[in-house]
Length: 605
Ligand code: AGP
Image (cartoon, rainbow, N blue to C red; front, side, top):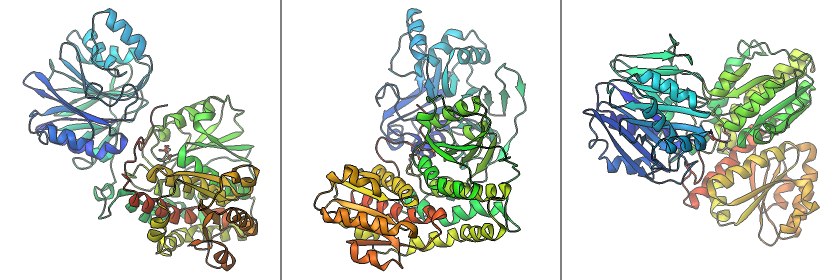
C-alpha cells in the first residue's frame, strides 16, 4: 500500500509534495520520490528510505523548482525497496511520469507486450507498465491516452500522471484504490487521503472507481469511465490539522490510546436519542436475518470476535466471525438471509473489500463499520456506520478498534430493540453500561501507574502468552497482536481452557503469561488455568477487576480494570494492554508509530 500526492498551481510544487508525503508516510515508507515539471521537461528525484531522505536529497524541494508535480511514498509489493523501483516512473522518451497506489494484476502480460514493442523497463514494478502505455497511446490527446491506458489495466490503481507536452495539466485516475482531489484557489491537489490535503484546503472531491480527473491551476474536471465530464460533489473535510498531529505526545499511538474515551463518546453520542439507539438514518431490517457474518482483518477481526457475544446475546442471531482473507475464497454459505458486517478502520483493506464483494454477490446486504469517510468499503456497503475516531495515524490501531467495538455494541442494542429480544428494562440497563464506557475507559487509562514498571520487567521476554475465556479470550487476541506488532516480541493468545491440550508443554520457568480474568461468570475457571501455568513456572501478569482479591494472591503482577458488564467489557479491558504493549515497545526502542514490515492499511492482497 502506498501514498500518492499531486499539486498544480502557482507555488513551487516540491515542498508541498514533500509535506503531503510526510502525512502519508504511514501508508508505506520504504522508498519515495517526486517528479516536477520544469521548462518543458520532467525532473525526478527518488530515494530508498523515508521522506526525510528525499527532503534531504532535494534540499526540501528547492533543487526541483516548478509549479506542477507528483509524489509517492512506497510500501513495496513488486520489487524490493530500491531507487529504481521507487516511484515516480518515467517513460522511455521522458515525456511521462506516473505515481501509483495499488496493484496492476495483468502487469506481466503488459510488460511482455511492451517489451516486444521495444519499450525498455528500468524497474521490477507492476507500475512501470502504466507509463509506457501512456507513451504508446499518446498522439497529442492526453485525456484519450489516459483512457486508453486505463482500459488496459486490471487490478487496483490510484494514478497521478504528468506529461511534459502538456505542462499545465495533470491527470488523476481511480480504480479500487482511494484517491481524493483537493480543491484550492488557483491551485489543485490530489492525494491518497485527506491528511495530505487539510493543510492546504478543506474542500475535497472523493473520486469513485472508474472515474478520472483533469487538474489545472484553475479547475478540476471529473470524467466518468466513458470519458463524459460531470459535476462531482465537493465535500468539506472536517478533520482539523491538530487532530492529525501528535498533540504533544511522543508517539501518535500514545495520543490515540489517550483519545479513546473521546473517540468512543463521539461514535456513540450521535446515535443515542431519547433513551434509544438510532443508527443514523438507517433502517436495517433484521427480520428474516438468520445469520450475521462479521468479516475483517487483524484488529478489526478481533473486534468482531469480542462483539460477537453481545450481538448473539442481545439479538438472538447466530454470529459467525470470518477472516476476510479466508472468506473471500471460501465460497461461503451466504444468501439474502445473511447480514454481513464489514469492519475496517481504513475502509481500504483489499481482503476485506474482496470478501465483502463475494458476500454481496451471494445476496447478503453489507453493513460497513469504517473510520474513513468516503472510503471504498463505505461506498460499496448497503449500510454504513462511521466510527468517529478521527484520523488514526499510528499503524497499530487502538481507537479504531475500540470505536469499532462501540459501533458493534450500538448495533447489538439496536437489533435487540428491533427484534424485541430484550425487555425495556434490560435494554435500558445495557444502554446505561454503554453510556458509561468512556468514563470506564478513562478509569482504565488512569488506574495502573505500574505499567511502565511492568514493561521494564517483561520487555526482554522472548515470548508471551495471552490467555482468557469467552470475552476475555477475545481481548487476549487483540492484546497479543498489539504486543507483537509494536514490540516485536512473539505473543500468542490462547483460550485458557485449551492450554492443557498441548500448548502448556511450552510453559517453562519464567514464561510470561498475561491472564485476563474479568468475566465473573468464569473467573474461577481461568484462575485454575493460572494455577496450572504457575505450577509449570510461569510468571503470571493477571488482568482483573479490583474486587477480585483472590487473584492478587495467585498472580505475580496485577493490572486492574473497572468492573464492566462482560458483554461490553472488551473496550475497557484492552486499554491497559494497549499501554503495556506501548511501554514494552518503547523499552525495546521500537519505531512505535511505524513498525517494521507494516503499513496502516493493507490495500494489496
Ligand atoms: C492493527 O493494529 C493492525 N495495524 C492491522 O491488523 C489492522 O487492524 C488490519 O490491517 C485491518 O485494517 P483495517 O481496519 O483498516 O481494515
